[in-house]
Length: 161
Image 1 (cartoon, rainbow, N blue to C red):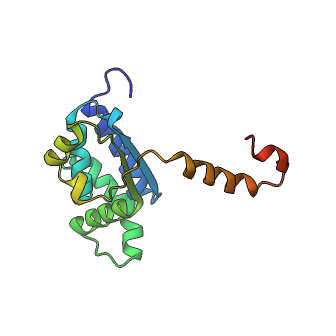
Image 2: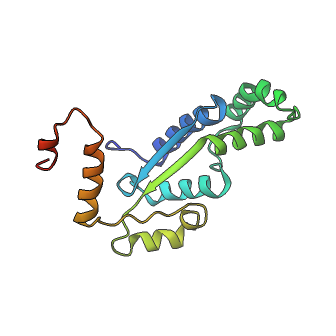
């Protein structure tokens, strides 16, 4: 994020993202943290993507037409009928298949709870993984197992590491 980054900037970035996943058919992981929430309107857009796979009014009609022309050949190969609504549905379906959103938010305080109430897609359309601090014994066990598989480290150095 840069100074002056606002909802319009975010919408332009979302257009580029949807072109990658919907037109170019690329798989993309979109990482969005609570530090990226410059405005709650960002979460409204994320909520729309989670619940419907699209952002309402993201594209003006001329850009939508260009997108439908871009995906037309691929859509026809998959037996999609050559109708405006069908081509748009194909684009959105492809975008949903290729876009994976990873939200990283702190559960500390009431902010996450409030956001989940205001934007139900954050709960209803995601898988929530709670990460807590690991006990020291678990960290040592994982490190020991990992280090034991590296032949380049002499055994007398593994314990001090």
